[in-house]
Length: 507
Ligand code: ADP
Image 1 (spheres, protein in one colour):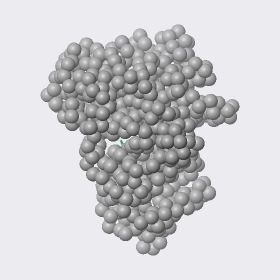
Image 2: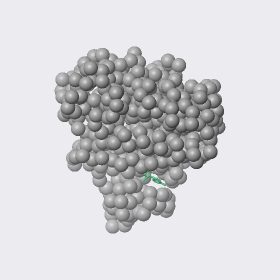
Image 3: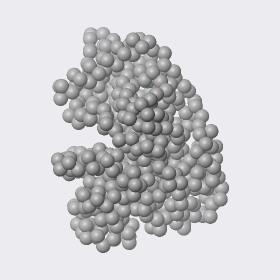
Image 4: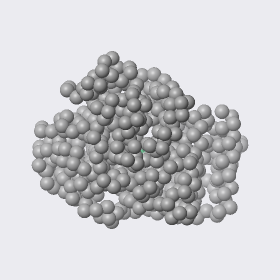
């Protein structure tokens, strides 16, 4: 058995599998990564090879250990953070998946979701799960697999199959089939889990026609999930932490008090607001979700997302070929006083919260003869900031009714903790602070997802005695404070809102 104080984080994301070894100070000592091929069998369909996810995860874990020179016996525990909602069903006897994993982005169950809305089930689903009916979540993907893979339903009813999101699938393989479990944060994204009672919901399982024998046991985010099977590492290692990627980032950012917010700016942007003990029901189509569950105590969050953040930079680079690399955007934007009225609405795949307009499409408005590459690139960065403001205003509106923030007092939005690839861009961080009229804090460790998984494993194994010990470790690297005149901010934001309105009427 391992007894040391290193922590091994497995960060299994949509496009890559990564392993990072952290020491007890939260410093990364070694890492390894493999890109994950995307499988697109048809329009709107996105799959992953679940077997490859497992093999890559194991290979990166072993590679990170080898690189570090740290022995398996020096590792206190493994923490898993994962792409959420992605659905795997496998045979219990052979551990073989019955189909490729259906990825969260996959839209094949859109018609099923539409039927659920038409029969009015969406209200009950939202009340129990905190989620908005959408193909994104696991439940309709499970139904699809049972209905479309030959023999699956009969095998599921006989108890021969197991369902898991990627966390459970990795755990099953890590433990050689000894442990079929998940954690409350991942369970809260399946659309089968009652976030108030903290258990699988029988009625929801009936509604989606899913035998409960398929489902994993739900544990805390820091828990005894079992040990790695013989032969994987020199000695068996405890698996002690687990959370969905955005929840893990919330832990990695030490957002443990109600009102604390983290925003991850990668391909898209995910914002999580800690609402403490209270599952705040959203009036603005935010998701209510489990932030983390520790020692049986659930902490909730409101979550909102922006579909296109860094993806706009990718489009400017690969689609329009206006820049060679995303970091060039910083010099281009900071070389201008303004975009001269150019606004980009990057609604390439519709608009998310608070608009939820699937039909909206992107546009660049306000072009004149002197508009050039720099103005368009800067408009792409500014759009990320305006959409962040859209989200945070919606969260503030939701929080008004929450006792978590003092009845009627509402949520004051003072500080935002940021991470993800885009936050290296100092100009963007300053503009974000200006538009939000809030301090934007960038941590020293921006691998917050993996760090959060390591922290959870560290809580369980005693490397960290408490959340306070983790809070004490959070280190800021840079802080951006608002400096823009209110009149200017209001004018820019009003122009953004007008542009969004134009885009929506066009669609
Ligand atoms: P993901 O985890 O979603 O793959 P990352 O967190 O690795 O994404 O961030 C990568 C994204 O950030 C890319 O979309 C890229 O265009 C964008 N990006 C990276 N560096 C910068 C930068 N300096 N300025 C603006 N955007 C950037």
